[in-house]
Each structure stands twice: as C-alpha cells, then as structure tokens.
Image (cartoon, rainbow, N blue to C red):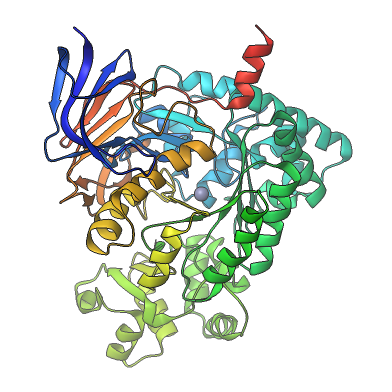
Length: 566
Ligand SMILES: [Zn+2]
C-alpha cells in the first residue's frame, strides 16, 4: 500500500493564497507525501470530486482548557473543519498552579467565561503543576491538535496566592513570575496571554488577578518571550480606544514578537473606530512589527437572563446587584428607588461597550404563556405593547418569570461593508470563537464555515483562496505552528473537505453532554464532509470517528530546550 489515505479528485486550495487546482492528495504516516495525479494504492480512498480540499482550520481563540479532558474533540470544532485549537486565551489557564491554588483558577473561569462550575469541578483531573505537565496530561487523549498560551492570571496566582487579586507584585515576585513564563515556554506554551478587561471579575466579585499587574510587571513577563525568540502575546482590554493601539505597537516593538489584540469589529457604540484602529496599526506593520487585531465573522451576540448577565457590568449599581443572592437581587430590582439609580446610570453620557439601546435587545425566551407575544420583539417593542417604560418592562417581565426570561443583543458586526473591509485586512486575524466559553449562552464554533458560506459565497468579500489562507496558514505562521496550515509534502495531514456550494454554519442547539449533567450549546455545520487530523478521518458527514488522532502542539521554546538537551 502506497498511501494510508488518498483524497482523490478534489480541488486543492492549499492555504498559501495561490489559486486552487485539481489534484489528489496522498497521505502516509500522518503526513502529506504527494500531491498531483496519483496512481498508487491506498488503505482508504475518499472521493472528493466537486469538493474543496483545504488544510484543517486553526481555531486560535478558544477556552477549551478544561473541556478537552472530557470532550477530546472540543466539539463542535471538527464539525467545522477545525483540526487544531489554541487554548489559554484572555489570561486564563489551568497551569501553572500550586497545590491548593486550583479553585482560584476555577473562580476566574466560571465568571469571565461563564462556564458551569459543576462541569469544571467534575471534569478537570487536576494534579499538574507546570504548564508542560498540563500539556503532557492531554497528550494521547485528544482527537484534534491542541496548543496553548500560558495565562498571566495563573502565573500570578502561582507566585502570589490569593494576594494576586489584592495588590501589586514585588520585584522578587515578578522575577519568580518570569521564571514561570520561561518554564512554560520550555514546556511548550505558544506564548502568553493577559487580561486587563475592567469588566472581568471572578465569581466572588474580585478582579481577575492580571488586572492588578503594573505595566512594569507585564513588560517584564513579555520580555521573556523576546529573550526566547518564541511565542505570541495575546491581550484583552475592556474598552476599545485608538490609544490602545499605541500600547500594542510599543509591545510589538519592545519584544519583536507578534502581538494579538482584541478586537477590531464594527461596533454600534463607536462606528468609526475600526478604520482608525487599522490605519494606526498599519504604521506598526510598515516598520516591520506585528500587532494583529482579532476579528470575527459573526456578530458578538450576548444571550442572557437576569440570573446570569455581564452586559451591565460597566454600571456600578447593576453590577453590584448581579453579585447579590438571587432573592435579594429580586427585591432590589422591584424597588422603585433602586430602579431610579439603574435608570440614571444608563443615562450618563460616557463611552461604554454596551450600547444601552432597548431597541437592540431582543426577547428570546419567555416562561409564561401570557408573555408569548414578546418573543422576537425588542424590549422597546415589548414596552410599547405593555404601555410601559422599557426599563420597567424589562425588569417587570423578568421578575414575573423568576429572572428566567431570555434576551439577546448584538453589539458588533451590524455594518456589512465595514465588516467586509475588516475581514480583508492583512493586519487582522479571523477567529474569535471563544470555544469552550459561555457554553450556555452561545456557540460560535462556525466562524470558519460562516466565512466560507456567508462572506465568500454569498457576499463575495474575498476569494475562497484568501479565506482559506486566513483560516490556516496565516494563523499557523503567526502562532509558530511549524509544519501545519499548508497542503505540501512533509506537512501534517490535517485536512478539511467541503462543498463550496453549500458550506455554512448551522444553528446552535442544546445538548446535555457536559460533566455533572450540565447543558451547553453545540453547533452543527452544513456542507462540510470530512475532517482529517494527522492522517486520520475524525469527522465524516455528521459523525465523529472516536479516533484520538490529535497531538499537543508545542512552541519554539520547547524545541529550543530539546535541541539544547541534545
Ligand atoms: Zn477569550
């Protein structure tokens, strides 16, 4: 047998951006070995006539750090052609950790990423200390490839314990943090992530630990990446201003490492900001430094109830209420004086992420039959039906339903021309799936299938070749995933095979497959026929194979160490 797998008769779009071409792809021992008109025999042949054969997609913005232990495919990733994921974004990781420090990390994940605590408690098999140990625990038990950034939040807790959420670090502590970052890079971390989002709190209402870091601390940690010539720096700030781009620029110049910042999107609250951000960052690239903005192909949708909501965290009285026990919260929401405060806070003229527009908040679910007419209407429309002020209608309906009324709103992505221009920018990375996070409110695994279906086929904002490049080689190159992201001999046989005439993302749907019987949203795809990881078919027309074909992807810091060790 010449090949383990032969993909016959497809149109190869190889990830480079070059025009696609008709060719067979031969795979042996997990690698692509030959491309062209192939005649050899194969253990398995896939007929790809009429389909596109592309490198597997790299979903670089995920929070699957815990989920990979109980769900080795990070579903619904392979359903959307993803063969590699990067975890550890936004400062959040499960390593390094000192014994007894595990719950501090869970506390951060539960609230920032809205994950069910019971699932994390039941599903994470703690027992590691270093980042390398953590990655070792995943090796051999994953169905897709997994790499990760080391999170500043974990690094800070590992050195300072609970004081990490109370105060600045001393110089000695910063030195110990630097050693942990170095140890993490040597263990295989693909870089470091931090979180300076003033809206990101732990479950107990304290800020996530990285928010207490000084600029000097953050610089000192990022300098380790410069010293190692390895890794990317991923950041999340809360508000989005043009001045932030100067911060990314300085970081990129200081370290000569790629900086990845969140985010460049069309925002209702600041409709021209995206253009200013891209203009400013073009100067960074013109000088030979890299500061990539992150964008998404789908609007950032927030789904919430008044039982669990972050949309209002920018407003102090609202935020305080959300941390009160539910029974006390309900009393406060019914109290006219508190309502007056809530109303006044929303009315203050200042820059916020939340658009504060009742006409853009939709009712998605009601509990009581007499409220059925509100579903699909905006809060403003619901208020008009009730002859009430919108805030009162919003709170009264929620209170009548035990705070279980469901709402959603989109803060971004409303202007199609702007979104098309952002997607095409060479300074922008596509992909903000946040897979593994907000699992009860959203599923955005399908950012890639949406790019191919909605933005390439239906709206024609870029060529198929350009879109595939953005989902594969561009990301693999920035993150230093060597030997992945292209269809070339010697590259890993990570492939996705789809029908360009139908490919798209499906509607998220409820499944109860998380530990402790918790629920979450999964997302099917359309027109995506095969996903191949390291030469093994892991997904085929709606079914996962069960093969644990994934590898842990380690960064250049680990390679340097193994070379030094001979
Ligand atoms: Zn994130």
